[in-house]
Length: 456
Image 1: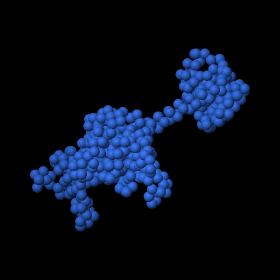
Image 2: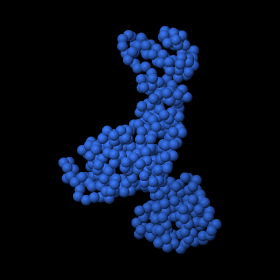
Image 3: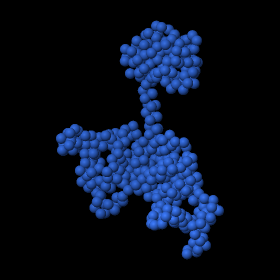
Image 4: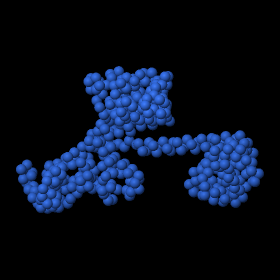
């Protein structure tokens, strides 16, 4: 059911059109001039507008032009008993989705409504799809990730099974979503299951579903991930942690494209593209007898290896920019920037948690900083041992607060001097200090720069 607005200066036309639409189950609001139509559109939403072209005062084409100026996105169908090609062309250029000649048949009117609403739904679905893809956009500038994305593009359109390999936090699910979105199955569902997160006794039910009463607690029928992913894609994350009993059952499904619910008595056909991922070495698991070799050969058809963030540091600036904008929009914050020194400090970190860790660090830095994130804030926020900075253990053992702070600052300065090969300008830049202030700080903390340089 749609809410329609009909604009025409002829009372008989208004009555006949509104009656035809209401009999077909639509709501219809009528008005006899363009000025009133503008008022109605400002006060309430409509799904579709039918407007006559020739009307006293504000004619239909003028109304159409004003609607475009007001950014009204409601589809408009123009109707006229005095139509000509020039009029139809102008209406189309002004944004009309159709142009109908009077007299109007009820069948033609209802078909037009159906077609326009179907087009509107498709446009909305495309918009939502673009938004979803934007949320899961793969940000990269490095040559390494360009090669990875070339592989994704090559295999996405096929039905080939893909095995995504990489450390935790490298974006394996993001790649799987991209494979689905760029495949012929993109209109179907994308369903995920983390094999490591489901208890061994429940994973069969999660994958294949169960019938009511199949086991204690099965009060209702449960649809499993395979059925949920029908005509779409199923992403099995951490496949290397799947129990071996389930590996055999998964192999059978991949071979026969059939599942059987727990407690069920009949096979159910499934049409699903299975994409798997793991951070473990599947070949080693096969050699140790912890992963079935026949299943390995079924899923390891087209491997995609995601590099850790420490091997794609050229992507860090664009990732930081992306996460900064994303986090600011989510929280309604003002835009913030990172100094070049702050980005250099992020590049020097080893990133054991990869891109996932980077996003968390960026959010923490935005909370701790003002309009600009500097190197001092970055160095204070990064995990110290992993970043190559001293821990605070020495500063927590004895002495007054001032003595402990001095001890910690001394350790920080010594670590940074060592990292930059005792180059004072680079050390000062990394710490966000003036070069002269760094000299004074070293002197105040009793750091003999010449002795340090000699390794004493």
